[in-house]
Length: 245
Length: 245
DNA sequence: CCTAGTACGCTGGTCTGACCAGTAGACTTG
DNA sequence: CAAGTCTACTGGTCAGACCAGCGTACTAGG
Image (cartoon, rainbow over all chains, first blue to last red):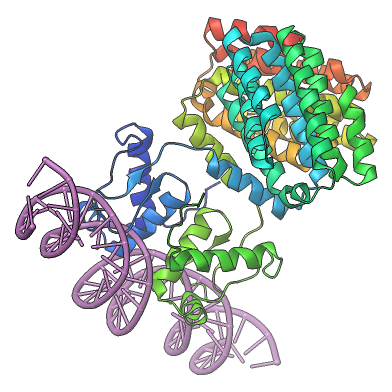
């Protein structure tokens, strides 16, 4: 019949007020908050309380403070970093398998590529081509990976859906988080990379042809071939059925 | 050539150590941390530092503390709550439209339903039927919504992919966050609900028949019909093309 | 003997006041 | 006018204090 109530701590109200100001646009990214000592008089609380509030905001990625900077804490632009952090955390806590992550990514990226094939503009096609060329020219693993990210981002942007862009990015990051070391030690990196590259040029062609179904299938195939090598056989079989569907 | 370094604050190391203990399983959900005064001697820092560390952990949803409880701060089980919070935050900050959210949900849920149709067991089919019956029997909006959640969860679980379960849940939550008020004031709630219900029983039949493509299409259709009424016409047209693809 | 009620010892939440290293910008110096 | 120095303030940390709130152990009453 009634809802349980919990006491509202002082620092929570400080957080709320600052959050509200950010969301309402009164505090834009790049703006500076008053110093802790100013905030403490403005809110009428002690510095410890202000500091705990700022700590929360900082851990949420909303502000950043540097010791000594007379300009005060900086309001940061929204970033998917915290999203990625909390997803990574959950993946670890629930001990999700790489197979699950990969399956999810295949599903999501498949849908995204299908949509992208339909909506892509010539400009975006150009971005994808550039990224692909960068991948081919890449010397080290880092450069290759950067170009890869650029390619996927270009495709995601072609969907004209910000949430798809963000989530693709985040999920890719989470997959990489949980595989980074295996990837670095992979025996036949070179072969893997060139196969991956070839797949992507096929994907690009499908997107150019506005063949969404094909683009989706090829994207799933590329993921399967690239990351599947790190999976145990049983998981690999499970994902194989996803490639063609 | 070199990476920029930032000074590591004391409270960050405290956070790291406690996080590490949680991830390594040395601190399981339900366990209690030492009191702040104990932690301060164990870490060799002041109470303010300990408190700022605990504040960060609390805002990440890893612990919870109650004033006066002699058992100390409680380690919480991992929960998608923070994931939802950070996604909601991002949606607001990037001012994503409802159309984008819905499009994303249609894509993701479509894929999930397709997979669920293939993998569902008889038990899960039973869970879906129960949820559907609860929806039909539901008196108020709250009960209806609860049963709806149960249905979607049952389908998500049928995919046997934890990440799909979590993300479906989160995205549904985010959509509801950004529409809750419109939904409550909807003129023809009753008609909307009964149409929604009918769609779901069709979806269930498709899942029962293991017809993934149909299940996906019907799921997208249901979302479109239900939430589409809250969209401006142009956005609605955009999503309409998604339903049949 | 058991139960109801109370008192205690601790908890977290908040405040005060202090010190330090670090930074930006004004200020001085060549 | 450019180089370097100085200073006033910043955030990070510490110490010590007080309060309300919670469990528990103890006590008084049945």
